[in-house]
Length: 321
Length: 297
Image 1 (tube, one colour):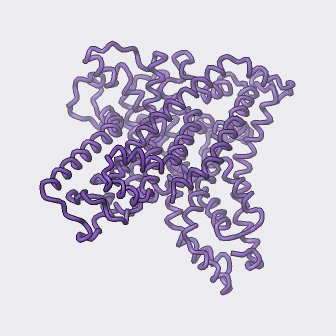
Image 2 (image 1 turned 135 degrees about the vertical axis):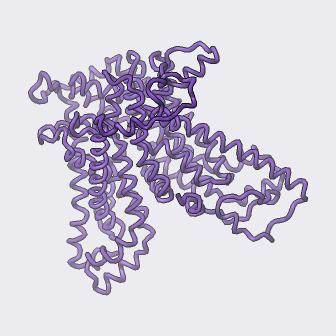
Image 3 (image 1 turned 45 degrees about the horizontal axis):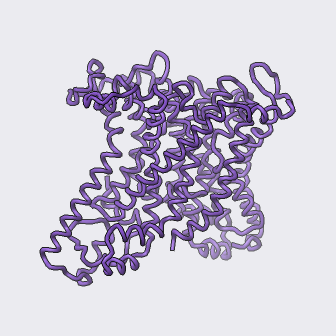
């Protein structure tokens, strides 16, 4: 992964020179490396190394604490998924010869179907969202009109009330349409769920596109489809990507609605995990952990590959208010 | 761009906006309004053929419902403690990341993973960690001869396990927001104070903290409202049990609607929640604008 090299851009780099007495001994993130060396008063050798050592210790302790807080549940799921069945509950055996049996048997055990359902419905749902929200976002970003604020609020409003508020009517609606336990039902729902989020994310990204570009093209007589295709779409690329990934992740993680509108044929990964918490599957810890790991893989890949746009999208998404 | 300048292009713009509006109206706003209407009726899908007007009987029932009151109390308790924990952990992580440790951006990415993975998987990971037969938490405590209950099958400790899982999942969101706020704090004050000989703690307490207070409230508000309606992890880890000791309000609504089929009553409860949440959002938004202005220079 090119994660490290992409460092500075992920967060606003600081432009001020760092405070005196804070020697740049350690290799640190982005912006600071560009600081001109002459701007720094050089402290005396001994003091400099004392400060550096203290700083190094502080950083090392922090990193250890951060990783010790975040990683154990992940590692534990992975360990559980590769631990041979006969020593599964023997927790004194930390070192063992791992088995990939469960990953090999994944398809045979019928768990591939829910993952496939999740993949298909999340992808198609997100694409549908992007089309609808993308079109609307362009209008909202580049046009002044009277009902704009009202319409914008109307679309963003559902973001504010939680999913549980619509769960009953939606189940009744899908039942009367005969769509219970179908992938179509999930796709329909997923498209609708993420429109507010996608619209907001695209809105924040489109705000960076200079208006004059579209305006001057319009004055030069370019047709609207041409403006959209030639000017806005290429510039909105990063925003679309961020919105797609966010929508995909939210759809992939969605639990309540798949639980309610699907039973077996179209159950998603999340719903399949639920089936391990009750009944005869209750004690299949290894298979449960394997499913958990597989559910997490796409998320981890997305985060590592697109962290910058994700962080920006999440910040925008969280602040949707 | 001016509306008039577009001429006949207007129609395209309308066509671009209409699908999204219709879609949201049909699948989000419509259902929400239907929920309000259903809350005024008796509708048990097993006994009633159609929603039946019952003279608003759902609302007096709601006031008398001890189980609902218990759920609201549990949700409130959960939301408050979880939010407090997340703010403390998130703030610590944000301040640490703000000191530019080596590999900062990779660390941030790793730290954010829990909030991006599926909540049911978070529930699974912590559920197994706390489990008596396979989990390491009971195992380690047992090796240390610490007497302990069955974590997920004892009221107080089941709540504790859920709180830990929630803090693990959502402290990163608080950290992300506060980190962004910290990065925006102008450094000049800071350096002046440092030159004047302020200690690290004084710097933090007097200079940094006041400037991110707004964002702390924003983050805490977000988490409070979300944690109040927590459902996914409860489903996987405790199922609302033991008994009803972790039956938060979302779980209560779910059981009313999909186990007892009392759709009318469940809708009435949702209506009340919606009203309460609306009030919370109103207060939040009023302060939110101010807070955000305070957080960004």
